[in-house]
Length: 134
Image (cartoon, rainbow, N blue to C red; front, side, top):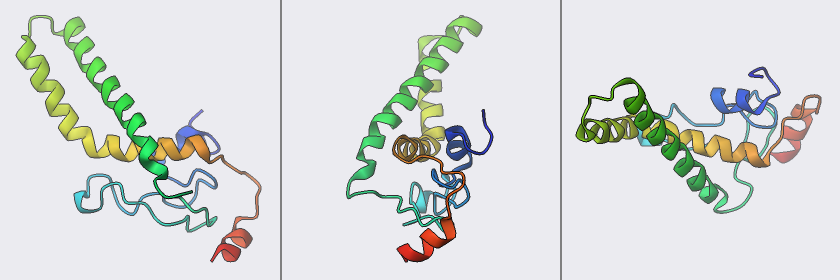
């Protein structure tokens, strides 16, 4: 399920959606000066990560869904496991975790969005394709 060839492998390891070898991001999501910056193309297969201008605008919907999932998870956790905590603590915790996980959720939204449109190709001749694209 998480092995090479699955979309989850590409998403959680931040690898190219097509070959799952090359890095997708320029740096770690918490390097705030380069947060969310992508390589122009894959170093292994040559896949151009931005299919068209504004391609990643749709990732905003994914980021929204991830943030709502985080909100609901924290809120339900408080209700089930810490019912004596006040609403103020709940809201404060949601804000805290949203700020702390924000850069990671931003990066995840981009790689998830890319995986909607690019598929893994197991036996393609990537090195030949990469040399043609350059």
